[in-house]
Length: 154
Image (cartoon, rainbow, N blue to C red; front, top):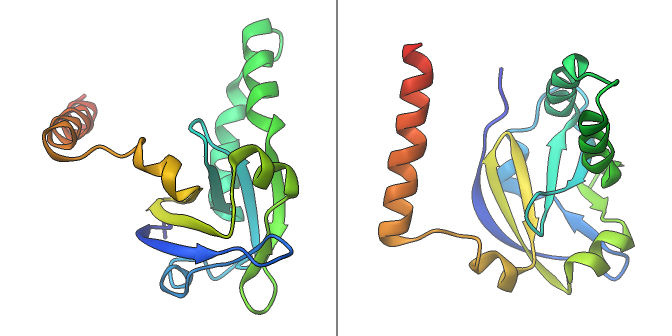
């Protein structure tokens, strides 16, 4: 069964840089390897958090990448550069590495978003410039959902 995260949460980092996984997202975690997660720097200035099973499914797509292509190697190098495997403790806390906290400007509070198969972790102020609203959101929704319908028709 596919993982489906949803919702927006304000969470606090403790003094050690640990984040407690939001209780309302726990139910979406897979039953197997629940405590193992993969943390990756996002394409935007945020962190993406994947359950291990979701990460492994995404890694299958890398099997077809041509390692003899300089462009493909550059992509892989860039993609895997900001990846860390993390473990949640029995209280559902996990440590965000200091390098990410500094680079992304995380302070005491972060915004945690459930985004389908992943969880995004943002600095609250930074997030606001990456969210579409109103007419812009309507146009994005139309384009993205139409693209999905087009893909299904082929």
